Image 1 (cartoon, rainbow, N blue to C red):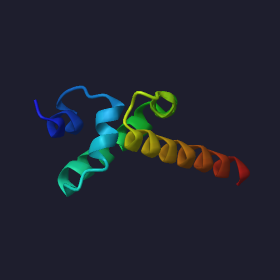
Image 2 (cartoon, rainbow, N blue to C red):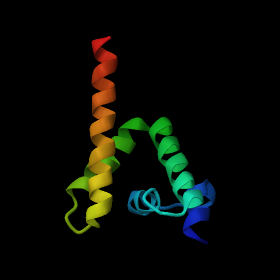
Image 3 (tube, rainbow, N blue to C red):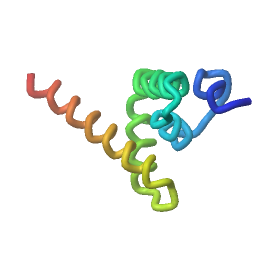
Image 4 (cartoon, rainbow, N blue to C red):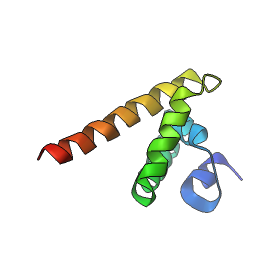
Length: 86
């Protein structure tokens, strides 16, 4: 099974692989990864945020995936904060 198939939902794939694919120069692969991240966000937001936090904190993970996890996590927390303000 290819990474693209896994990201498309026909298999299981870790958050690290999805974050790597989300940074791919291949637009198709990147789009599939972004869709997968959106599905994770919608299906179980708490687990999605926890996965991002774990990715960010794990020093053995690739720096690029840790940066993207931190950016997405920041945006998720900021968006939730804005919802409470309104």
